[in-house]
Image (cartoon, rainbow, N blue to C red; front, side, top):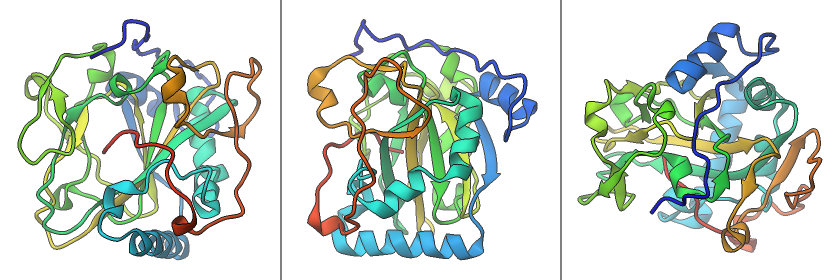
Length: 276
C-alpha cells in the first residue's frame, strides 16, 4: 500500500553545465527516466570487481544471489565501490554536490535462473520523500537481453505512483505494476562489465528469466541528496548511510565511516531493500 505522506513526483534535473554527463544525457534522463551507458572501470578493475563479488558469493553460498544487500557501511570493499569518485561525478550531475548513499545490493542471476523480477517502481517500496533517488547499476558481468539484463519502460517515471497487482508465478516480488505492458515498449539496459547506467526511482523496470548459459551480475547503488527524508523511524533503523560528498546541512541522516572489516561472514545486513 502506498503511503500518502510520500511525494513521488519526478522533478526534472536542471543542470545546464554538467561536468561528466552531456546535456543530451540530462535530457534523456528527464524524458526517459534513465541514461546509459557510461564506462567507469577498465579491464583490470573489472576483473578485480568480479573477483570481489565471487568471493562474497562463495562466502554467502547460493542464497547470496539476492542477499548481499545493504552492506555498503559494513564491508570496506563495497564502501570503496560506492564512493568511487568516477561514479560520484556522474551522480553529481543528476542530484547535485551533496551526495548520500543509503543502500546497495548485488543482484546475481545465475544461468538458467527461472525467477523474474516483475515490473515495479522502486520508490513505491521505500519510506523516502521526495522521490529523488538515482540508482546506479554497475555491471559486474556483461548484461544484455540474452542473459536477462534489466529492462526499462521509458517515460513511466513521470506517471506518479502506479497501481499494483499480485505478481504470482516465479516472481522475486509479490507485487507488480498493473498494466505495465500497455505503457510502451521495454528497453534492455545492455551494459558491458565496468559500465554503469543511471535511472530514476519511479521508473518502471524489471527483468526476465535468465535462460542463457551466462551469469548476469550487477551492483545497484542508491544515491540521493540529503534533502530527502526518511518518514518511517522503524524503516530508518535498517538504513546505514554514507556521506559520499558535500554536507548534510540539516543533519537528518546518520552517517557511517569506512569500516575496517571486509569479511561478509563477520557481519550481517541491516535490512533487505529492493530488487532488480
